[in-house]
Image 1: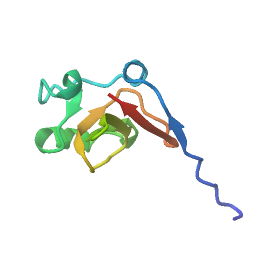
Image 2 (image 1 turned 90 degrees about the vertical axis):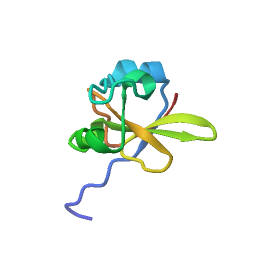
Image 3 (image 1 turned 135 degrees about the horizontal axis):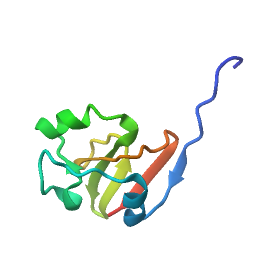
Length: 101
């Protein structure tokens, strides 16, 4: 339609865990030390959740678990959620990540 911009196409991104850490720089959880992924995970309740929900949504990642293993997905996810990771670098809105840990 005239005057409306189309949504950007989504791009599926495949990178390994180590490359993801180097590129997006997850921050350490200083609220609840000793969480999963070497302390990068914020719990989905209490003080951790209060911190997570104040972050820009393009810097929030979800740690999920399935029969196939543990995965880090960009954005908010609730199914099979283990916690959230906040990164110093944001992801692009059109990117879709599925990082196996």
